[in-house]
Image 1 (cartoon, rainbow, N blue to C red):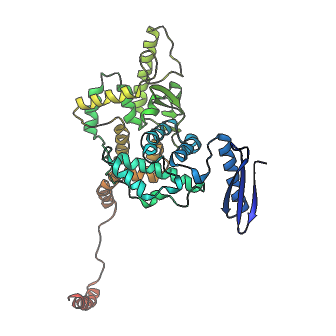
Image 2: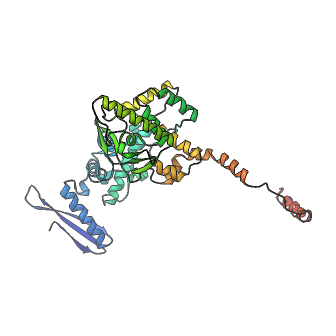
Image 3: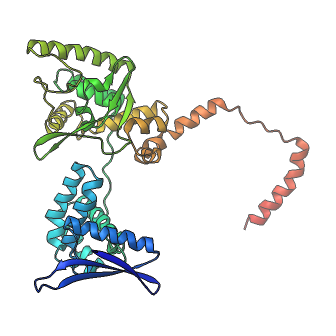
Length: 396
């Protein structure tokens, strides 16, 4: 038996055997769990699983570095996308662990964290340090759930405040100028499709002709393309909401039909046959487009069009804003964008919705009849003294 549970007063004591030490004696670890026996049983299962993976360290001697590595390997790796894992792992290895990793987890105080934020802000932006705070806080919240900590110390710390970057959306006039400047560029097809569908860059670069139905005017998002450590890789969409079917405009369907024929002609000249599993947006040889190259070239096109600081991702925001301004329902837009909820969509584009209130009131004004004063002269006479009394009482 590698571990067992026994009743101890109002709690349950867990005992696990951790093998023999250098002296040949058995090593044991004890933990106390308050609550029901089922809670203790689940905790025992977690401990034994950690032992099997070789990532368990007794909480009393667990350092912040050891805990971050456990969290990355045990939780982040199995619950987040590869891209997210790489980003969090990079921040942990280059920032959090060098600064806080030597501290025992139970000895990590809010003052230590606050001091780290203060020092980090000397070299990094407030936005970057705020992201570090989110990562550290999530890892410590996991430690609380695992029973390593009684409370998350990040809850007692004030992270650096920063103002979010203003969302850039293009007006119809700006969009026309952008597309005109991109019309002769090899990346025009993906740019035009992006602003017509609101798909993310990774979703666009992962599209195959099999996922596009030109007869029923729809696009199925079933894979994404990311560049990881210099290598382009295909992955599944990170959430169930991202895996979706998106409608397309008749204009986009017409354009893609012509573009499909042009791609087939190029393939024939190269002695190849175009297949349904070929990428929609690829180089001449049919290989994936490099996300970094696309981003760089789009920035050059936007600058040539007189649109400074416009990113490729802003095409997605432009799609959503134009849909909202044309009266599309938030639910429809949320599903097209692949958001987790309508509330999230409303929050992201709240500034656009607020700007639409005057237009909505103008439409309401057209529908509602003009107000009529239905109070008779007699009633007016009866109301006058009361009104005078109210005014006299409130005049001082």
